[in-house]
Length: 277
Image (cartoon, rainbow, N blue to C red; front, side, top):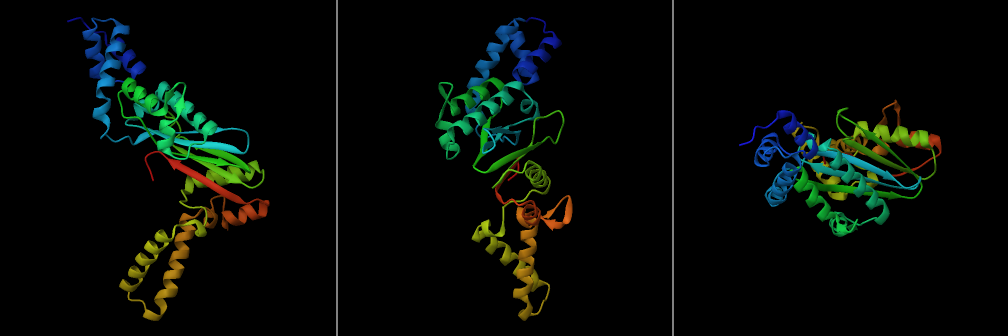
């Protein structure tokens, strides 16, 4: 068996993102031939694709693409480890897919996966990356906003890794400063909905039921329960809807008030954090 240089193992790992032992075995099998070792790892990766389906891809990145000021897409592309998240091929794949989303505006993830990109389906491109990088690679979600004025904010939770938090904010008219403020606020405060009116009825009913149970267990008078529950639901709106949240730069104002004072309306937003709902 050929002696393996650990510098070559490290270089092979950096190039392919394969595991250290897999790189060592590939170099041993190829008798030190670096290019042949790469081919061995690619073949092994292709064979292992099916085995990864049940594995969890909870790392990754968020990527953004703008087309002018009125069209943008946000994508969460997942992998299994931070090591692959910072791999150049993985990041290039994310950039290609998010640009494709802007160009084609697919309706959902299944439609995106079946769409053609560079002569192959997006799913085929993911499978190739899966084989080459040795990890489960998947598209978790994406969003397209179109119309008005759209800005984005991307945040790295680790300077060594690509952005893990991404936000799109859509205003009815151009105001770059306010749009940036609201996008940064959303990144920090993690609102789930734009406004109380956009919270699904079943979500409101679930929260109301929990608050009612909590209030009864606290022994509040029956006649006061309805009013107390209403107050708690309104408090929930202030925590989880963007327009009702207190602005991080001035907590005496809501985001709705900040927008009104600037003469703009917030039409929509998207916030993704890798691995979170």
